[in-house]
Amino acid sequence: MKKEVLLEFEQYLQTFPKKNGKPLGEKTISGAMTLAKYIQDTSPGGTVDYLKLLHKNYLETRKYPLASYALWLYLIFVGYDEKTIKEVLTFKRKFSSAINDEERLSNSILSKKELFFLVDNIKNKRDNLIVRFLYDTAARVSEMTNLKLKDIDMTAREAHLLGKGKKPRSVFFQQATANMLKEYLVENPVANPNDLIFKIKPMTVWYNLKKYGKELLSRDLHPHMFRHSRLQHMADEGVDSFAIKSYAGHSDIGTTQIYVKSSKYQRKLAFYKAGDIWENKI
Image (cartoon, rainbow, N blue to C red; front, side):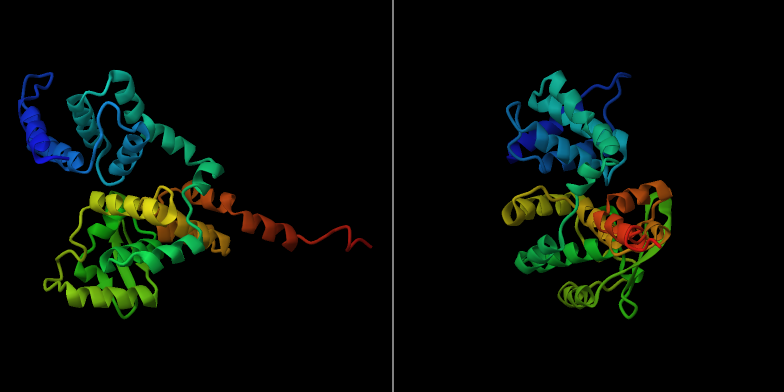
């Protein structure tokens, strides 16, 4: 987005009247400006699907009302009609209910072949590390970007995350990821234990992954797909549902069961474990 358009949008926000006649707050303006910087070449003739996905992923790292309001302000500014705005802003709820469907979940799962291809072809060291870390830990993108140096135990290859509702949990990462993390910290030193490891915003991670998905896999790619993929692969390997729940930081076992139900491998394994009654009949 060109600088002059951003300046114009900022001026628009500063003069935008709320229903009570008061100006917009600093947090609202800041959130809307952050969002606007990541929307490229979107106009009333732009792609609604892109805006839907952006809205859905923006909500993963922001409070729902603020994220929706920020996008609503931007869409009005660039001239989207009321029908399109409503379609974009209601996408999150549609997606949330649809994710319980096995077919929709399967579209968010990366195969191991795709994961290998990504790490073999992403040349930027930080981005390559982020892909590995997101998959190994099944971390939400906001959990990863909020990770501090003191939260990492390199010897145990363990990361201490602060999840939804400020619930702490421990996750682990592979040796190859640990090696890359050590190298990254040598090149990007973090002196204070309370400082962030990845000085990057969640939306930047989302933007970069979208680019890699298009360039390398010819498909949509966003941070939460690595979480979905890790949990699904754990279910495929027969990991206990409660262990997956604990690792993912789910508050409800029902959420975890989605992955178990979606595991074709586990269904097939259960079928063969039950045995063939026709062959074994007396």
